[in-house]
Image (cartoon, rainbow, N blue to C red; front, side, top):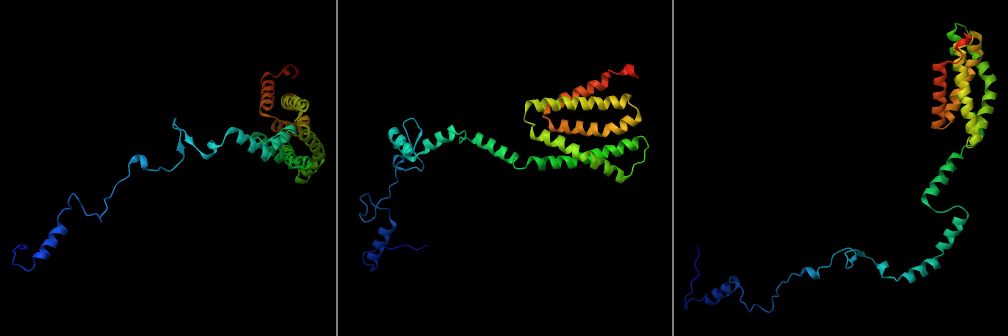
Length: 244
């Protein structure tokens, strides 16, 4: 450990005094050249974000504009006239109405004749499938070309039915007629299976099943459920039991 001597006769006394001044604590008067650090108070701290009103709600720059000045700017922009014009023509700018128009445009994108053609191809395949199944059920041999010939003969009638129902399916009268035709075709198919001879089933069953499937698929949920319930009740009750 090193001791610093304070002898007056020592030549290093001025150096020792300088070291004491540097290592000692600053006096109360302090050095005027060394500024004292001050921390800002909480009231002087500027926070990020909008200013707050007396009730604590944020206040933005637009709130400083008077209401009459806001209305003047809106009228000069012309947005009110555009909205009134669109409203009179039934093309308001509401989000829900735009979604409805967009949905309708997507539905009308495919022409009716093309939609009917697609349905016809699928229903013709269903008709050919049931034609082969009915003949297989009664052990009647039928060739592939014969099934294709019957499918080709039934295709024009299927296309006409599909085209008319797709074109006017939004009409209530057409929906009612489709419900009646669906119930009639389903009940008649059940009647053929229960009381008709083999030849009648083979000739009429494929067309009836195809028509019933198509109408049930095309209708809404509630009419389809009604048709299924009516056909199910007809099969359970079997009002033509006495004819056996």
